[in-house]
Image 1 (cartoon, rainbow, N blue to C red):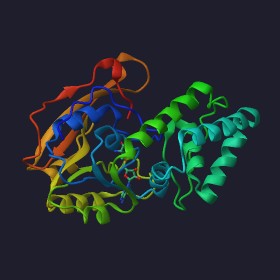
Image 2: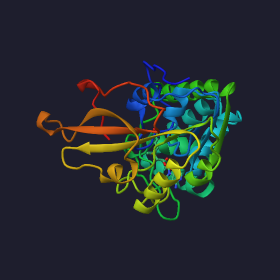
Image 3: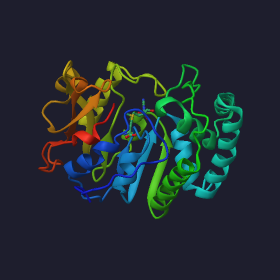
Image 4: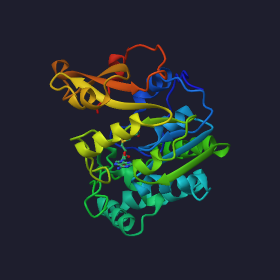
Length: 301
Ligand SMILES: C[S@@+](CC[C@H](N)C(=O)[O-])C[C@H]1O[C@@H](n2cnc3c(N)ncnc32)[C@H](O)[C@@H]1O
């Protein structure tokens, strides 16, 4: 079932930093997998890779219970497109009326009760779509400061995203689990394929729990001993830095690269090249070579 050409990547209803929207086509074209086992994704995040690759069987997980509960609620039919619309219209109208105070009320309610709809609300109206929690597990991203955030077109966009993933999930054997990556990897069988997109060491460390060099090294060790194919996404280099961790822990495997540009400010001189690597278990890489995102699709990461 892989490689697969995905000409148009669809975006899921949940956003997070490090989302691989722009890399999905590159990832799906670079891997060879017959699809006989299950797709395993222990760092699910937004789920954009899973939802676009659409394997028949999957075991997907994240340490962040809110992401998993949200997708489980859709899978169980507890959140439907019409339920989401009704909720967003109601809360969006209150946001417009009461202003940012309402965002902070919902954020507090979410931190107390953890409702998946409130998670959707804060995720889609917080600053920059960041997914960030404090040490006590409380979501702490401030408001995006647009009180008219939930305009009709925006609500429709989110509802359509929910409609899309609920349809994709319907005929699939997908299991969503809240767990640490190591528990998930212990379920890997020889026909499975594992896709890894861990947090970057030293960056975005407050997704939900901390991620450090010790974890990153352990991940490489455990992954290399897996009985099945695997691929790992990792930044490789930019103008200022090279990721030493790749050389240290992931050498001797297949590597495919993808370059894109990000901007700091608006001037052309501040346009920086970033190279992403996809490390693939030997024997599971296609001959798809380096691709570069066209300038107009430059991505801020
Ligand atoms: C780079 S993001 C994944 C992004 C995802 N591929 C996407 O495109 O949206 C990393 C994810 O790993 C999760 N994570 C962090 N530490 C973890 C751990 N110890 N076990 C499992 N998941 C973890 C974070 O909650 C976050 O969702």
